[in-house]
Length: 414
Image (cartoon, rainbow, N blue to C red; front, side):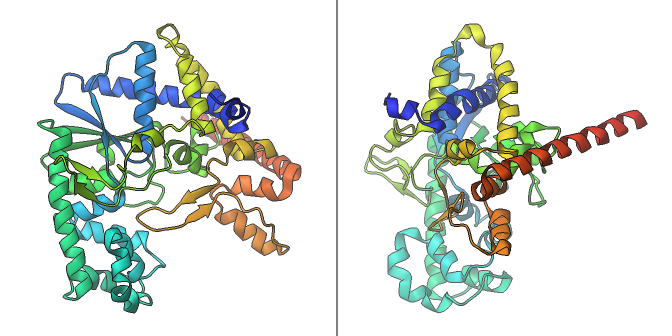
């Protein structure tokens, strides 16, 4: 490994803190999979976050000298593709998701995301819709109307649905139980697929499961957050700090590959996605990704004699993660601002910066930037340095104190 990578703060953070975190995830996932070892089940690791989870999971089992309980495969899926292939059976659910995802945008943006292969050819067609806001009527008109754009979308949906059915058979064969593995949080893909493909039983195994948006979640009884199951931050539970900076997990797990936008049939007859370009596997664990390289280095230190230590190392790591998220130092910003930006999801182009480096002279603007940041605590420290860290440490102490007092009161009442 390149020595310059090993000297980076991201590498140290990955090896010493995220390594133990993900090893405990793998240990727990193995225990869940053991339940299905004798059943008709297959584990599908969802693109994109689940791809690296499979790499870690299989390396963990190899180091622990444990055989795979169930067959594991990559699953080329995304919320965008799931929306397409589930539309024929669950149009109301799909359209409700689309309205939420594309809220505050326009119909042209939605259509362009839905038709990525034709994006350059439909510029003239979608031009009139650039000023049409996304709402119940406009989305229904787009999918159920009689215009040229509607016909293109419905044709694309029909093609993708047929390809997906073949792809599902290609992946699962006669297996009826599907164990989806992904980072989380809500599990929209599982919800969509379970409403559209009833011949399969869809279970979700996530790093974290959270109904942070307070939506109807009928799939939750068939899913589990292996590390975290909480809808909001709770000071006494260190894992819930991840909800304050979920990008830390997603950026660590998501390789620099495109989101899955569509399926197509390859020359050999198999169904593949747009993600699976030539040598795409090589990008899953690139040597120049310092944080993920650090995690892999930690996994290389594991062996079957220290399986019992995995839990102990995790307990120490999760407390450090919680404290660093809630009251980071300037050095923590360097080690935890993984990727520097977050790519937009659901077929939309562009990125969102994790931290803003330009400090506006206007205090109101600063506060707005802190509030809307992917990591508000990190943004505050980025602006105010040691003063910001000190303020957050005091706030952390107050939160913990109040939380413990509330817990003791409840305990005494019982």
